[in-house]
Length: 539
Image (cartoon, rainbow, N blue to C red; front, side, top):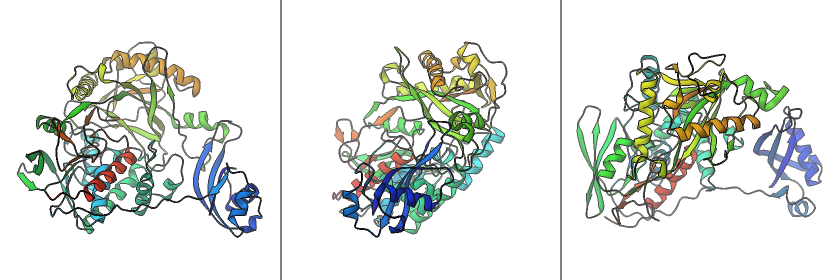
């Protein structure tokens, strides 16, 4: 098959239109194209009077492909490349079942890969299954009674389950394709395979996550919910098991020689326990900021002009970054078109926010995080867990400023730029389900963060006119875009106990500091599973 890129298509294109355009590039008759399939599609909205799709397609042709390649532009036509994941050779000799702590994307794909290899993994997840977890999340938003073990951060599927289900990633690892094809096999829309901004949506992720769990169990795995790891059992620098506590308060010991720490970025208490046991950790940069909300129709029109509202386009996306003079960079993150800002708290007396949207992306507002990077030199101390304390300080301040009942602090962009506390909201209706308190977000975020944010909003407004509209809403704090700590691991993915390798212990995913989203976490889960499968030690 041949791959043709940079095909400009109108919003209402047909398959015949694609065949004609591809045939023109290949200099063949459209009738010679036997089959055409979509590989990638993006939206070109640089000219508001000419918004269109740009396609990359794979074509099977009747003509001699080698001759076609010789007479066409090599920059636009090449042989198609297809990736198929080939599992590593299973060399593991141990008779113990590997144990995975956490069932977010990293834990899910680690468990799935090990289960497919016949290793019957045991998964410990402190939160509830995705059905009960959904009830816990919406129950918290309705009642403001937080379940600290089952919420947006903890539970089956991890933090990404209650987000946009965005699958964009900057990593180049070919295993990313495996994550996408698995997602589709378990119920995600096929559009994620070719969309330039693939997303699943919270409403569909719930079913997908359940299907992955059921497959792990069908293959001999065991998923135990309401099971929080309390310590590792270590002897002579090797894992001999772990202890965990169930919801009834009963402690259990589990013998194993292999533990995967797929903890997620919010398992702060577990990180503290592991640090206390001597696991080597270092500070890691992370980002903090606010969620900014605009009317969805405004963002759509700003991006698409008169084409806004065309059903072929859906809700508009944006992604921006800037570097104000003499300061840190700022960027938008996890943009949720037609979504909502959500209260994503997991600790009592602390507030954090995130963004979420369903597959349809049809809510009143669009939102994204506006984040500023924080380097370790800005942490309160040199302690490896100092970044966690910084997060907690901001989230505690937000809880107090919001009124002490999980109402989130918010400020109008116009008031923020004028350094004036907001006393009311305006034309943009805040979507946070636990409500917002008009306030001054400078009482929550560090000064160097708000200074950069103020400069960045002005700069971003030049790129997306109206981004800094006075009545847009900033809700804080967005403080968990990534983990502020890394559990140090070696070439074979095993961690360290002091200066020596801790045999059989594998930090994994975003919480351990090795990923930054659903896809990269899933890929890291596969990598760790491969390390376990090829480990020939018989501990």
